[in-house]
Amino acid sequence: MSGTNDDYDPLMNATENGYYVGLWFLAGPERDWLCLVSRDDADGQFRIDYRFRYYADPKDEDPFSGRDQKNAYSAKSPGKTEDELIAIVDAIADKLVANNFSGTRLPWKMRKRRYRYLVRGDGHAIVRVLASAPFAHFKRDEVPVKKTHDGEP
Image (cartoon, rainbow, N blue to C red; front, side):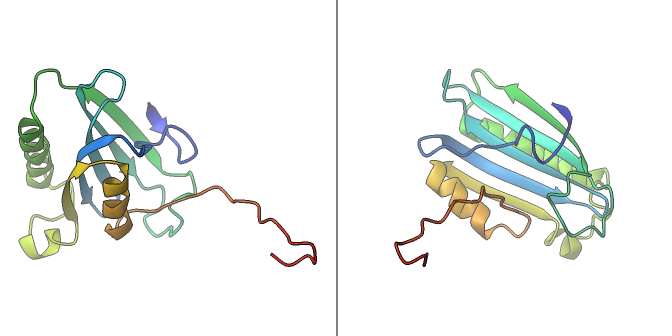
């Protein structure tokens, strides 16, 4: 899933009965990183899905322009517990910060660039988390409006 575009291969499709461990996000001036740990519905194993997004134009305010470059990856983690996976992803985020991924290591600046949400819940729980996340953008399909007999919606 390298080089994905907003219209293809979303990182996450939240399902009502899915199980989501946590969500991590790091922002930088020209790129960001998003990571999700969840349980695979098909085989019950935990998985780590993450992507790096490189902004085509950091001043572009349309997150759905499709011009950004995204590189997405996924890995299964047989035998790992939720707590072990949380520790692994925390360590990855720490390493990215240490390597100046966000363009700063200053703690007061990182508070607005680094996010960690432990969900440990279903699809409703992850949607609630995303709805409050300052970095999340939602896109929904237009739903046709039924008109009444007098033409009013």
